[in-house]
Image (cartoon, rainbow, N blue to C red; front, side):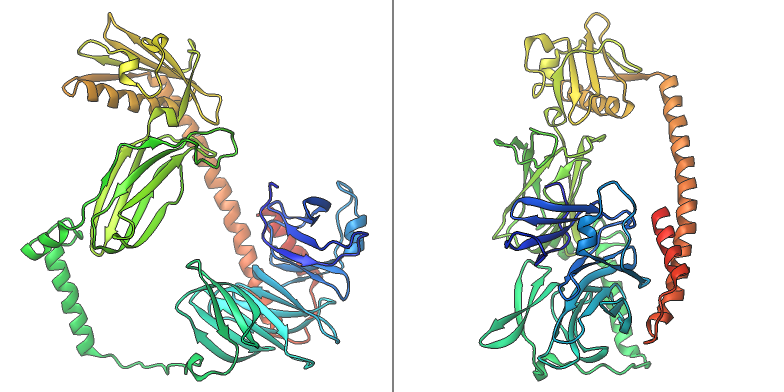
Length: 535
């Protein structure tokens, strides 16, 4: 299923089957309903710029969507009867909340259901007719929401988690208490633990936590009163500590060392990369078929804590950054590289290892067999590069042993870049001590040229190599770059104007959300939808 599952929830829809259904909002802002593995309904929302959270109101048998800074509702019967590719789908009601909707929750009891919409900076409550009931402004960015009715009472309890690790509990629009957790809750739900109602959190550190939803004193934090007095003694001690660190490690960090103690500490941080091997079977999760993957292992010294590893590469990796709590538990770190959507332009990979104020920079080069596959030589090409060597030329099977494996590849070889139809041809001329690389793409021409120069330098470190490149190719590349830059400036100016309109409309909508007698403004809602579609 080629779809980004933003919201997956069990819903009961009036279909002939008694099977529970899954409501899914796709990456293309389309709503789909699945029964098992079968899609029973799929409709595209042409008025939504990007996907957002969805929910189902069983009281009115309607589907509620939060997208493009609006909350919309459509009856299931109207959605099912709407023809694919027909007229525009008309929603029952649409309310502009003026902010990105992060989560939707619908609380249903014996009275009128309530639609709770968590935006990035506010919590909005709407009735099933789209009438504003109340709103609550947040001081931080909201991430997750869980709303429920506390028995037969008319008020709603809402639990909101923010990006600062704070968990807020509200009774309608009144803040009851707040708790500061050592993690950021990415998802909130309720569960029964020890015969009491508890809160279940999925933390950002891949942990599941359960907390008590009561008034336990340890969960309550008294707000710290603002203190405008400056502790000059503490500021002076902190400044002295900073000056001492600068004196020891130098202004550029770990590069300059003046004391023997600092030199001894820096010697503890050493890291190495092995030569790398191809994975069998491949570990690449590319959609372009059988793509090879290449893994190198990073060796770290023992007895180090909180080591950060950052990877910079043009190809896809298992992860761009790693955090190692203890190197005794993980002395080696595997780094896997493969091509996903876009092939690389630069074959070099940089790995940075950070520990406290020290860092180590490592570099390796990707093998050509990870980037291309042998093919027939293309005799005609738009861009050409000639390498003149002051010594005898080598066979390509010796220079590129990982990809030039056949005897026919000794003097010429064609390389087809993965995920593209581009072919780079490499030819040798033994009499004139010359290599020629040609291709229709200047980017991949540069890639193969760099790899060939590295191979020649490895065989003969003292060899002098003269690179000859046609000036017409450079002029053409410069003209294409100038055109793309001009297009970028035009689109940037148009996007800035549209973003200014959105900010102005949000500024006009925020005061309206605080009014309990809020009436939707049709003209302003239409302006918001038009601006979002243009963005």
